[in-house]
Length: 315
Ligand SMILES: Nc1ncnc2c1ncn2[C@@H]1O[C@H](COP(=O)(O)OP(=O)(O)O)[C@@H](O)[C@H]1O
Ligand SMILES: [Mg+2]
Figure (cartoon, rainbow, N blue to C red):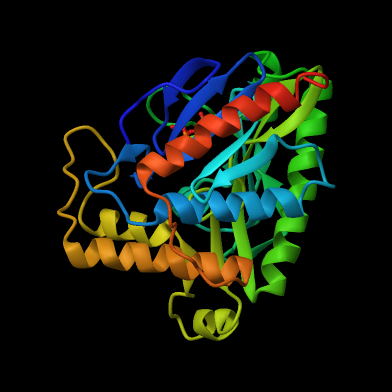
């Protein structure tokens, strides 16, 4: 969708995946696009229904975690749009890991036994569960790659005060616990995920998307142990299959590396996997977004008016 203006719009930011409209001083409207990023690079082709899947899973999860900590979401004016409180972001991504998967496994395999200051036990295999979920924060780079960071560095660099960081850590672990419960009810294992927090009115809020295939890794619980015992890969419902495909084609987002060709079949496969994940995670049948881009934009305009009119007093 081309950029155009909403009522009360005060800013616009095109993220890797979402278009973020600032409304007044206090609100955001986020349109989830069909763009897909991996290794912090936006891939050359878009994935049908990915924006809707992402947005609806995030909204579902934010609603089911609203009692764990305050979050930014106020309304979902269209299947691919969310609106809510604008927060002042902490420039860290709070990664929580239940299993030795993805980046943690790649780091472990390279021989390292400390991740973000957290010591890792010897003798672990890929996807083994940690004794307790671990926090492995990363920097939230405005450009380029996010990098692992320790709690000490976060405090030293004043990315959060010790008190704020303590609260954020407690929220992140509690959210992960809830995320695992919600996943478990749907026959899924939440392996790891990433949260972003910000401040509004002096209070810490959970912001951004949560528990989506872009920010999390899920496994099918059924067959997980059996597959691992027999040396097969457990079935993963997340973006990791995109990353693995890219790695197998020699692409890890490094300078000079070329994104492999995305065939129609590949696109369709990725789209199907996103839809499958939506149905699996929410337990609901996927209904393709009925709105055209114009209709969606109309809804965003009405939403912008509502945000300013209805939330003024407690904003
Ligand atoms: N409630 C919020 N307040 C302020 N910023 C937010 C909020 N929710 C999400 N964001 C930010 O909006 C952006 C969402 O778009 P995204 O495509 O994920 O961008 P990015 O490429 O920066 O990850 C992110 O930068 C995220 O940190
Ligand atoms: Mg993001």
